Length: 419
Image 1: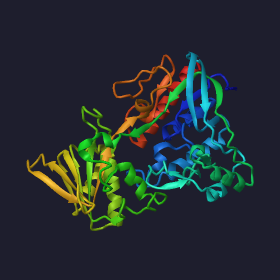
Image 2 (image 1 turned 60 degrees about the vertical axis):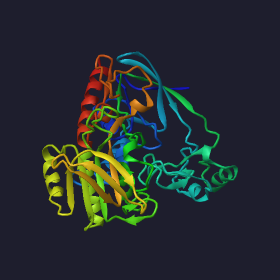
Image 3 (image 1 turned 135 degrees about the vertical axis):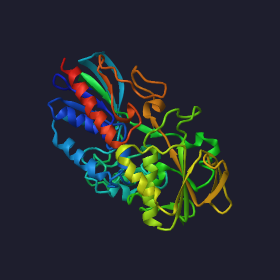
C-alpha cells in the first residue's frame, strides 16, 4: 500500500468521463490538488463512444482532446485508470480514501507501438464497440484512448498467446506478473461522477432484443455510425450486412415504465433525431419511422427537431410499441397502436433501434460507501459531508447539462475542502 498526499483541500473525483474530467479541471485550475480515478482502462466515458454530439453534429474528439491536453498539462491533477474506491473513512475536510488499481499487465514503458496486438493469437469481444466485433487480447481500448497505453486481458491469453505478446515487446512493457495495487489518498471532499449505463434491453421481453440481428440499441447504432466503429461508419444490419431501406426508432424503450425505469431519460428523443441524420446521410431514400410517447426537444433543440420532422421520408407515430416480431427474411415488424388515429399498426422494417434509457452506474454496480441515493439510484449530494454528485450520476442529462452540473459540483467540493 502506498500513500498519496495532496495539499490541504485536495479533492477526489470518482469517474473519468466528461463529467469527471470537467469537475477535475475546474477544481485544479483554481488551485486544488485533484485525484481523478476511472474504473476503465481509459478516460472519456460514454462520450468517447459517441459518433457525434447534438445539435452541432461534431465528433466527441472536439471536446475530449482539449480536456485530455488540459489534464496532462495540469500538474495538480493525478490520474489513475483501472481504479476503484474500496473504502472511505474520516470526516468532511479530512477523508482517507483507499483505492485499488487493477493490473493493466502493461507498464509505463509502453509506446503504443502495437507490436503486442499484432503478435497476439487470442481474441476477445470488443467492449468499446459493445461486443459487436472482436479485438486481440492485447489492445488499445480505442483510437484516441487516454492514457495511450495498451492493456492486456490476461484471462483470455493462452500459453502460446502469453509468450507471443511478451516476445513481441521490445520495450519490456508487458508484465504479466502485475498485481493489484492499493493506494491511500487524503482529500477534503469527493465528487461522484460515476456516469451511466444503457438500460439492459433483454429485460423488455416484448421488444425481442437478442432474438433478431435486426434489433439493436441506440448505443449500438452510435458505434456503427462511427468511423472507428465495427462497420467503419456504415449502418448495416448485423448478421447479413444488409444496407438499410427502412428503419424504425422505438422511443422510451424501458423508460417511463413502472416495470423498468420510471423516469424520462431526457436525451433519448434528441439522440434519435441525431441518429436519423446518420441514416439519412448514408441512405437518402430510406424510410424512417419513429414511434414515440412524447417528443421532448426543449429550447434550442426545437429547430433541430422541426428540420428532421419535415423529412418527407420520415414518419412520426405517436404510440408506444407493444411488440417487435422477428421475420423470416431477417427484418422485423413493429406493432404499435397509433394514439392519434386509434389504429393498430404493423410496420415491417429492415432494422429497429431501441432508444434504451440511461441508468446510473451505481444502481447496477452499487456504491463503495454509504451514499444518499433516490429510488432510481441517482446520487443525492450531501454538501455537509462533502459527498457531491455530478453529471449523470446526479440525473439523466445531455453533455451540455452534464458539464454545467460538474462545474457546480467542483465549486461545492472546493468550498467543503477549504473549510
